[in-house]
Amino acid sequence: MMFARVSTYQTSADRTGEPSEETVKRVLELPGCRGIYYLKGDGNKALSITLWESAEAISGSREAAASIRTATSAEQHMEILAVEEFEVLTRDLKD
Image (cartoon, rainbow, N blue to C red):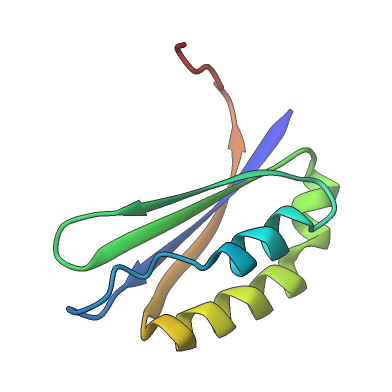
């Protein structure tokens, strides 16, 4: 079983909001983190998706992840619009 945290952001018009390599490293070092995706959409909207190996891992990461998210948002001049957690029901990637 795997879990995902999806954070939605409003970026500034002159920035993508893409996290720095250091930010990505900090997230991946959190216990139980399996991966991170960052998506940029239309209208200055962006999403980050982090994947977690268990319910305990995603729950245990909430405080540290919130701290990283807040710091990154301030650096990138983004507004955090929402943070949601999900159970991953399907996970397949095509080669």
